[in-house]
Every structure is written in structure tokens, then in C-alpha cells.
Image (cartoon, rainbow, N blue to C red):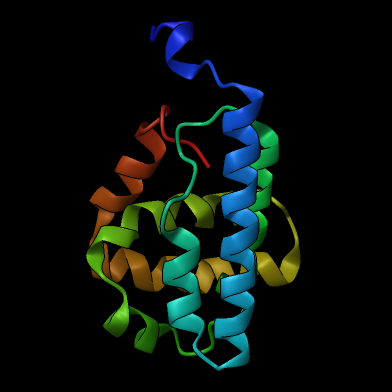
Length: 136
């Protein structure tokens, strides 16, 4: 078991993290207004607060990723532009989306999941489910 000191987060660090997520949200809204949903998704996935245990940070970042993910219309085109380094983190967010039970979100997550599994293979699923330290 990892030491609790590894997950010790100060209010200052959490506020800085929330501030970065808010900045990211504004950038994503700008990209979406410019009809650049893939760039918005890349931006949303970059710097995701994977190691934090704070639910405010995780929820705030989920909202940002969800907004970008729901704007994707051409899923095949998305994977032509999305670097493989984003696949595992995207898979984690797809499972978070599926856990919401919201029909439009689940529909979009399943469409992306199908294409992501074709592109990245089953290893992507296994890495996402097995990694209990880096959570979204």
C-alpha cells in the first residue's frame, strides 16, 4: 500500500489545480467555438489530475473532458488526429462516462470505446482497469 504522504495535498495545491482546470475549460470552449473538437479533446486530456484524491478536481476535470468528448462527431477522424499517448487516459474517461448512466453520454462513450478498442487493442482496456493509482 502506498504511503498516505504520497497523496497528501494542501489546499494551495488543490486551488492551483482547480485554477488550471478552469483555464483549460476556457481554452476548450474557445476551441469548440472554432470548430476544433479534436484539439479541444487533446487539451482536455492533457494534464488530467490523475494522482489527486480530491473529488472536486476529478469532477471539474471530468466536466471539461465530457464537454470536449460530446462535441466529437467524426470519431474515425478523431483517431486519425489523436496521438496514441492519449488512448489510455481517454479509456479511463470513457469508463467514467459510462458510469454516469446518462443516455447521450453513454451512447457517445460506447461509440468512441468501440473505435478506441479497434485502434489501441485490448491492452488499453486492461491498463485502464488495472491502474488504481491514476484515477479519473
